[in-house]
Length: 400
Ligand SMILES: C[S@@+](CC[C@H](N)C(=O)[O-])C[C@H]1O[C@@H](n2cnc3c(N)ncnc32)[C@H](O)[C@@H]1O
View (cartoon, helix red, strand yellow):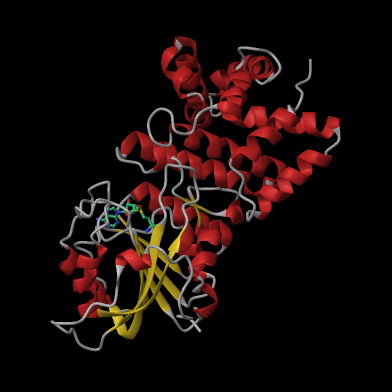
């Protein structure tokens, strides 16, 4: 029996947490609504082969089954080995074709696909550990979108997920339940923070030009750095987690973006031999994984030294609705932090930006600052956090 594409169920899943500004997702929805049945079923079969024969996706989408069932563990091992041993490969392929037909049948209860779609259609995004649901939801969405409308991105996306899987097993403190923190609509990855949409909100992209050098601190998987490099002359991007840096590198290479340099480094001890026109510190003045815990003034002083005379600092907060304890991730004490910040940089403007995923993320404050020619030890602070928290658009035109 050939497999059938469960189009209505898949549409219902995509409607739960939509990304209306994501062009590939919109194209995928359109294709789902207009595809002929035969074409749809053949696409479903390809998707099932891609997902059900890849140990990375089996573990990401059916984590409980992979741990609990001995036969799943054996299968994962065989799938990993089949790439290398010709006999094992042939045998596994024969066995697997039958297995994919069984488990890819979303209409039969108790198949892997039926269980996954039922979970994604009605699972509670707040249940379990943070991002337990959303990591699976967005992984599935990315596979679906690339399979439907961006087949040329499949190889890159599969390699990105393989690196995330390595990170999850070898790094220990992954963000977002091991799923991508930064998304990139251009390659079919939704991410918890969609890069293009996020940058639209900050509104500084059109103001960047080829004469500018940019530094991004804690660049994560590098998607924002790559997007910035499309407009700036040069982007240096520093990140502590080597698996994320590798994602940035392979993506830049796949997209032919050669003016972005990724460096695996601990920002606290990193010493570049140049300064930058624009420095980005997005949720990075301290990090909730505990890997960056520099005292705030030391951090700001380093930013000042890394910024060109008259250069710009673009700063994104952590949680500005926090208790104000100043613990990692709590910027409820941002006025106190800006008593320090404004000695080094002059406040230009700020705006609140909305979280992109339901309940697991928080609205952030985005601040535009200009380097002072000299550090001023005593300065009247302009930041007023209770006021800034209310404003979801700039007061002026900082990039005009
Ligand atoms: C909250 S995420 C923010 C990522 C990125 N700045 C953004 O806003 O999309 C913090 C990032 O900082 C990285 N990081 C943590 N400690 C670091 C360190 N000592 N040096 C450089 N990067 C670090 C983490 O691996 C993570 O990717």
